Image 1: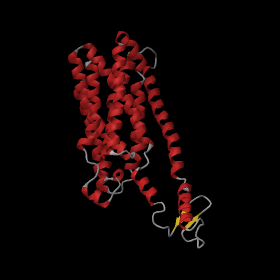
Image 2: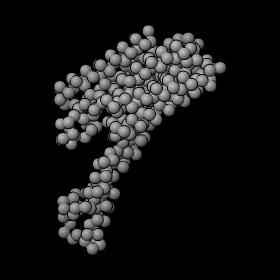
Image 3: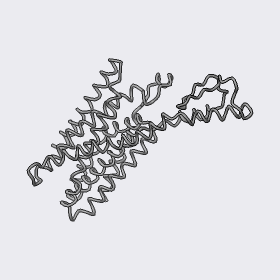
Image 4: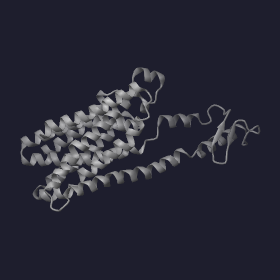
Length: 318
């Protein structure tokens, strides 16, 4: 019972960024700046990169390697290394596959051409205008529009702007987060099985560890095209993995060693996923910043993310 409550409490930390973090300044709102391009969001993304890197190298990998030390074999640490590489490769393959589908849809302007042509035909009695000045569709489907009557495709265009394309990175982050939350559920339930005191301490430690992590995850989802509410709901859905982890630990308590053996791959695999998200998906966008002052702010946020994760590790795992 307490294991489930602890997992739910940790899962609720996912909505905290929605309540306390602004994603745009008032000046950016007045100028109509895209929320995914706002300066404050880029600083949060830098913090997310630092938090993910700190989590990987100061928490996930050391814990995985500590378990490898007691494992039999000549090269026990190689197992975790292979799972890290596996996580990186699998996340890369998934992003490549789904990005291909998204890019194919974005780069195919044929539906827009057909929509414009049909609209013009309706306005001109079933025929396209003879002067050819209103629409020019080339062989590859690209359109050169000079004088399209109002109302032809403006409604569809406005709807498209209101529903931005979500990037694959957001879903990859949710996948990695779900796996990470599963391990948290295992840890919380395992601690409560030892004693109530151990369970409370573990829940408190993981909760404080997760708050900065959730801030970074929230920023990544916003950058991927999620609205604030959709990002919060997605974060709550990943909390379900924590409940599953807690239930697995509870029902497998009689064979704890077997459960630990079967789930020992999760931490290094998650570390590989976090490395891909931080260094391949998020960091390249931040490197495109041209303003030296903003670059300095982003670098400071990245260092702060690493330092905060180091502090959490030292305080709660010493």
